[in-house]
Image (cartoon, rainbow, N blue to C red; front, side, top):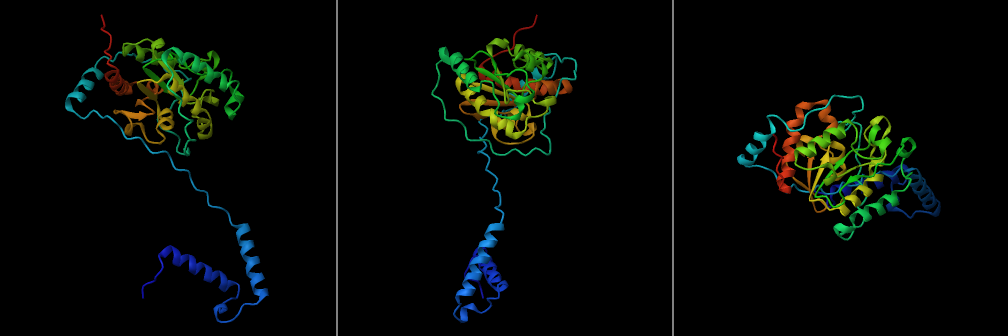
Amino acid sequence: MASRFDPETREALLARVRFYRDLGLTDFYRRPVDAALLEKLAAAQSAAAAIAEPVPVAPALPPVPEPIFQPKSEVAKAEIAESAVPNLPFAPLALTEDVSAEETLPARAVIPAPPAFPQALDAVPPAGRAAALRIIQEEIGDCTRCALHTGRHKIVFGDGDAAARLMFVGEGPGADEDKQGLPFVGRAGQLLNNMIAAMGLKREEVYIANVVKCRPPGNRTPEPNEAHTCSPFLFRQIEVVQPDVLVALGATAATYLLGQRQPLAGLRGRLHSFRGSKLIVTYHPAYLLRDPRQKKEAWADLQIAMRELGLKPPARG
């Protein structure tokens, strides 16, 4: 005979019957239940509720934005391949010990859902964006919101044109950045400068920031609570600058901008959307120092950005 209850309801009823049975109430429905039994039942229920541990519910990740562009045509692929493979325009730099960026997050890392985005700002006109960024920097102040402040020398807020059409987002400051208070000024920064020049731009024509503003100890990957504490300031920087194109440099930047943890191979080569800007994912310059073979892949990603911005690489004499 089929049950008139759905499986979940039926299991809940059976559990309640088993609970009563354990109390010795096997035939309570056939005879009146005296006050002593009712008190015993109430006390047992209270005790069970007191020792029951709530089951944590993982917060849901924000919906993953659908990619809005992916070069599928053979012509587009050929254009990228033709200019990407031979004689790449930015030369690799020598490997140094101060290179920590990895293109995959540690297996132990669990990325919880980021906090809710701060309320969207009204669009800031270009003339007022530098002042708006200073207000955000003043709000950060001498930040002690997470443990990263204990080992830092300087907060690394951002650098570049407050009204730039192109913005780069990295992971966090390294040793050189921590000393100077500016993003991407070490060896990886020199390579990023070369990449920007290869796109036909100058560093002062773009804006550069990081997911976290303080250097993680030993240049390790920021912990999720550190990134979630700091990333709302990054989101506000992006809202002020209003870049046409965002470039996420490496796995950490991609993770916290897109709200998903996924290998770069699944995110590269196409455009995503982030709060009104087109987002491109590519390798971190520090990773390119470790594996120069990936330069052609990074150059292909940058060419997607160039195509969106209407840029052409400068002619080489």
